[in-house]
Image (spheres, protein in one colour):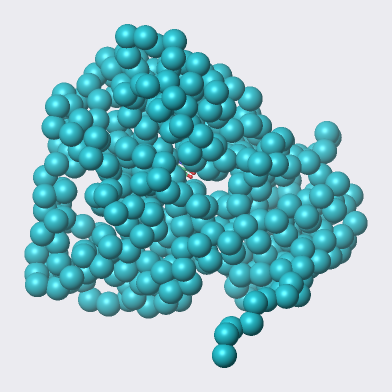
Amino acid sequence: MTAGRYFLQIPGPTNVPDRVLRAMDRPVPDHRGPELPALVREIVDGLRQVFQTTTGEIVLYPGSGTGGWEASIVNTLNPGDHVLAFNAGFFNHYYAECARRLGMTVDEVDLPWSHGVPADLVYERLRGDVGHTYRAVLVVHNETSTGVVSDVAAIREAIRAARHPALLLVDVVSALGSLDFRFDDWEVDVAVTGAQKGLMLPPGMAILCVGGRAIAASQRATSPRFFFDWRPVLEEMRRGYFTYTPATLMLYGLREALRMLLEEGILAVVARHARLAEAVRCAVGAWDLRIFCEDPRAYSNSLTAVVVPDGANADAVLRAAERINLSLGAGLGQLKGRAFRIGHLGALGDLEVLATIGGVEMALRMAGVPVPLGSGLAAAQVSLMTYYMAPRPTAPR
Ligand code: PLP
């Protein structure tokens, strides 16, 4: 490792702020001891604010987003239940696959990966399901493999318009803490995330927000489950404890990360991600490279997937970047070798984005992609300066 900061610009895990690292640097507490309830209460309150819910309940597990998928399915569904899902990216596909392996009958609709899941398709499928056989709709809010956002509000509206009772299970792994996600307004039944992206923690936790309908479904669900059965976990967490040994040091980190997000303000966090993402997209435009997402309304503010020109290999860009202490995301699934991903989520500021863009430019050139040096950097600088030079309302005296 060379001197200076290592630039972990993959779309998660993200950089862990010093404040969070310091909060975790402490003796391991007794997880059945007296200090747990206040810690858990603050975390649950903070997460509710980040999920934008007053009604949803928080469930934590040691694990990762994949474990969260499994928990969302086994707690709400019975083996054999019909589920509507979408092959609209690597993670959308694997969420569907997770349900399939757990015994569900998954109707996985093939879609172009360059667009979000169309709400009108959800409407048509559900309208056509007159017997209400679908028990759930599975969707990824921010598809991390492609940098494409699906409009969860519109999907909820489609379910409502079709007068269909299916549950809405949403993967917010690379959305929460970065994009505007509204659990209550969008009447999401279960939202699933991990610790290691917008929440700025190291990997190691699955975090769920579950609504009343999902809790009711879990009382009836017949899927076998033990560790992931959220009923006893919810009961214990309401008292400030857990049924299993929690990742205690991560709880201290999570409390600190939530304090940071709430000090900045959730809407300000979302706006920061939008500003940084726009600067990255301006850079890609200046390089004359293609953003994989073909619908500008669906551009992700947490990552950008950049397609390399014919004849170039995206993996060569990654290898070149590693030489200058910069990690970029590889192309996944059908994007392998064709695209690389720039992560711009989590604990990140303007100058770090500029350094990243400068590094990507060098890596592209070293990998034989002839982008003009400085072009992306200048475009991003202009984009960021537009924000800083805009007139601000002055505070009333
Ligand atoms: N869903 C999305 C959108 C992801 O980006 C990821 C991982 O990157 C996962 C699910 C899987 O989560 P994990 O790797 O934490 O198990």
